[in-house]
Length: 194
Image (cartoon, rainbow, N blue to C red; front, side, top):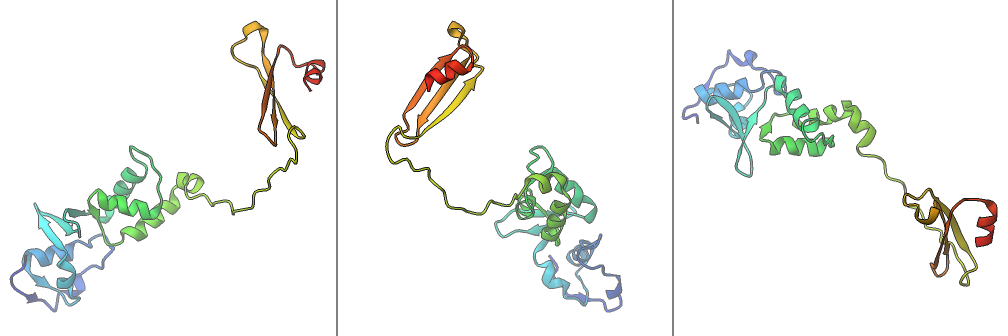
C-alpha cells in the first residue's frame, strides 16, 4: 500500500477513463508508486490490491477478485455463459457468476446486459414471457355417469392376445375409469363399447 502522497499535476492528461482498455493502469500506478492524479484516484484505489504483479479488487466477503482487461471480457463471458454448462443465463445472474468466478471490471453489469442481448440462444429460450393468469373454467356434471370423456389409445407395444388398441372412458363427475382392449379400431367395436 502507498505510504506517501504524491501529486503530479502535469500527468493528468495521460490518465485513461474507467471502462477503456487500460482502466487498470492508473490504479496500478498509484498502488506501486504512490502517484496521485487529480481525479481522486486514491479513493478508488482503496478497494484494490496488487498481488504477484496482478491487480485484484477486494470483495466484501473476503476473496480477491482478479481485475480483467477489456480484451479478456469476451473470453470470461463466453466461458461462463456458453462454456461447459451452456446455461445461457440472464444478465443479472451472469454478472453474479462472473463475480463468483473471482473476476471484476467496472462495467460488469452493463457489459453483461449487452452480452445477453446479443446471445441468440438466450433470446430464443431464456426469460420467456409468462402467460397471464386466467380463471379456470370447470366442466360441471350434475350427476354421476352423465358426461364421459372417451379416448382411443394405440398402438400398444405388448400385443398380448393380439390387442393393439384400447378405449379409455373417464366419468367427469366421479373420475371413474373404464378401459376396454381392442384388436382393431372398427366402428362396430367402438360402438359396442359405447
